[in-house]
Amino acid sequence: MNDVTLEDDATLADLLLAPPYFDALVTDCDALVESEVHRKGMTVRTAVSMVKKIKPSIVDRTVRELMPDFLAELEPCHAEFKATEGASFADYLAARDERVAEAVLQVADRRAESIGSRPIRSAYARVRGRALTEIRAVVPQLARIIDRHRSRAIAG
Image 1 (tube, helix red, strand yellow):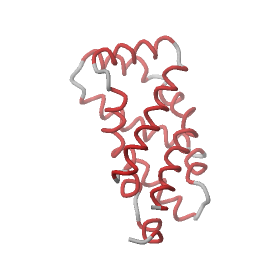
Image 2 (image 1 turned 120 degrees about the horizontal axis):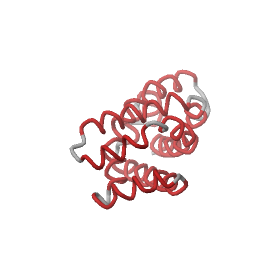
Image 3 (image 1 turned 180 degrees about the vertical axis):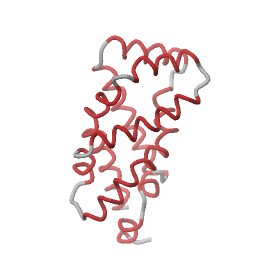
């Protein structure tokens, strides 16, 4: 498949779930989550710490498992961006921070409903109320991560 076909026809999932790009994307998203948790208040740090005591690899595992659904939620933005022939997907997403944050939360909420662990569900419920605001604040960083890996995948 040539680069033109990749760029024109490929979905975010086609580009970013491929083995050489997926692990790097997950690693960068893990680092973003860890950095943001460290910057947050005691409630968030305590909730995440409590969950990590139960499941030490929870951040990596969660990012890895939810990424396909998140990319699917972002695909309408990706299709719109490609139609505009814009220069930066990161800028496109950052300008739509609420929409991107809602996509993250839709995926997270679906996952939270299916979690069997009461402490983990409880921790999520405690931070969910202000999650939209918190996620919107990091959309520019998340958008840069996604765009960087998308560009690498297109370049092949």
